[in-house]
Image 1: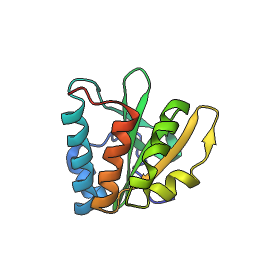
Image 2: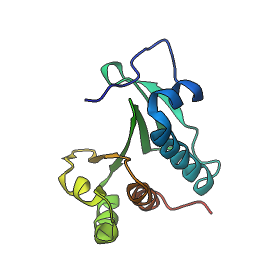
Image 3: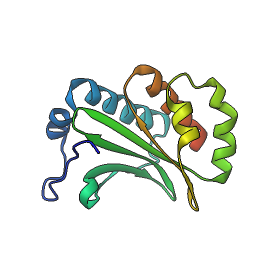
Length: 142
């Protein structure tokens, strides 16, 4: 596991987050946050959660989980959990995904509460695929 933000007493702020993620991953972070804010205005109140050995993460949730952004040293993970209905919709668009997201989805483990997908955001192609997967997860408000 990559290095995570483990200091329970220091909830991340923009400055510490930018330094920890590094320029490229922080840019991906701000682009994902911007996408969620503009596509789902007023829907989510992102919440910082501390997960012990897993460190800090930013969760987007309304009545059910939408996605979680997990900062790691010099990299970013986005976790999306797909329920049964969402899996059917996601599997219909898998051939259209262009990044490693397709293979990561196929190899992700399905548990009783859904298919847990953790995607490393390492390029614009995976960023676009994450946006597509989030639209499948929840229809945009606008």
